[in-house]
Length: 81
Image (cartoon, rainbow, N blue to C red; front, side, top):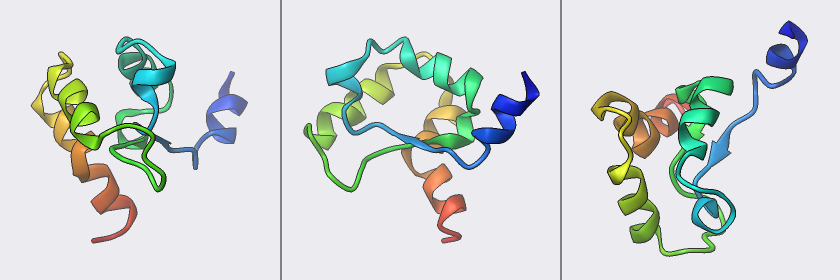
């Protein structure tokens, strides 16, 4: 449904409560559905230790390029830093 992609084109997700809400299998699903460029590490209101979230992202089998994007590359691009 192309209209879903269009409706979500400006949607980003963060890793704030990932461990509380989902299994780590959520990352590949979100990457496929929204695109890897839409996943941002951290949050404006951390519910968990960011060290724990960092460990989880580092443990994923996504490849270094996708991990770099999640762990800062996407935020730098979005914020034009």
